[in-house]
Length: 430
Ligand SMILES: Nc1nc2c(c(=O)[nH]1)N[C@H]1C(S)=C(S)[C@@H](COP(=O)(O)O)O[C@H]1N2
Ligand SMILES: [Mo]
Image (cartoon, rainbow, N blue to C red):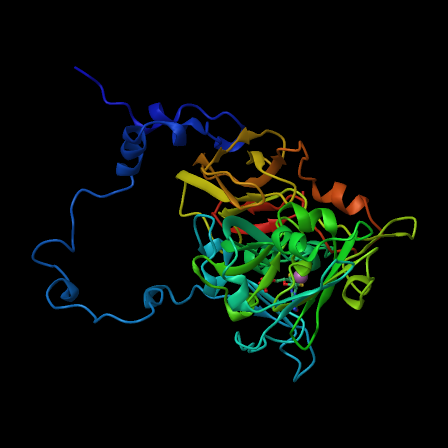
């Protein structure tokens, strides 16, 4: 008699410590996956048939102009964090609830927000973008002008230079959700005009090596951007996930510098001045540099390093007893594409390569997954990514050793989560 393969047959034996299984489970045909999933289901339905609930028997809600998420999930909210003095709460951030989400795209309403002086209410009919300095002809664009240029769409993450740092740099691991630590990170499909198109029209002077980008908010946030980046993949973004860019992301236009630290992605962009060197503006001298052990500071660390993060499980997302689980998380690199993600369940002693969910795009969040048969014993989960430039994510100890004490910008080290025998997940340093 033919014997159906059991879940264990399909999953195979663990390939790394504490029950990590081979990623091929996710690469196999749907049949194998269906077989495994069925084992988590039950044999009889309670809501289909005579006991069917109310909503199956009467008309549903009417149409509306702009939909909102299910009220059953209205606990999925950005986490507002501000250390500003009373009355100055518009300076601070709200963080994307990464551990409550799936896939890789951040809906507009959950994109993290980092503001230095609040979100301005910019009138798109009055806003202007000026390109001047070392150019043949200074140009001023309105939104309507820009909308007539050729556009392109690309999926990219934006990550704050301060992401992960303040909390990960603390001496003791803090017991907070992944998004409290790492939630200054989001990923969208951005649509707009290539900056190189506008710079070509203005006519770049050969002496132009840097461009000062300035926002129209009352912080007048400004950062110097190297010309090579402006001519490479920089965009004046006008749309975010298909809708006009949200006010909090820079409506009506922002500078998008894929893979560069968040602060260089100037929102409510009003001016770009071509110069023969960096401006050393307040926003780039008061922050975003790293003090080295020898007392010198590292400046213009513009590209975000490869990074990965397990979200399921993570602090607050506990295990529901021994058995089959999918470990899942996000990986990204400001230098290019994610090439691989390795996962450990024994604090880095042994590793298994995770499956990457397609498409894997450059400077975009990438979802990784790995099957895990948890035997109910304590485990320490960690992930480590390598990008297509061959750069490998650092351990916390390696990262900290690069700098003088208490540095916390551009923190890109590995995050570890301990699982205790009861399935409770906590933040640990390994
Ligand atoms: N004009 C302006 N641009 C700005 C900021 C700002 O306060 N004003 N904050 C910067 C910082 S520090 C970051 S991390 C990103 C955040 O982008 P987001 O709010 O769309 O997530 O915007 C950058 N651009
Ligand atoms: Mo930032």
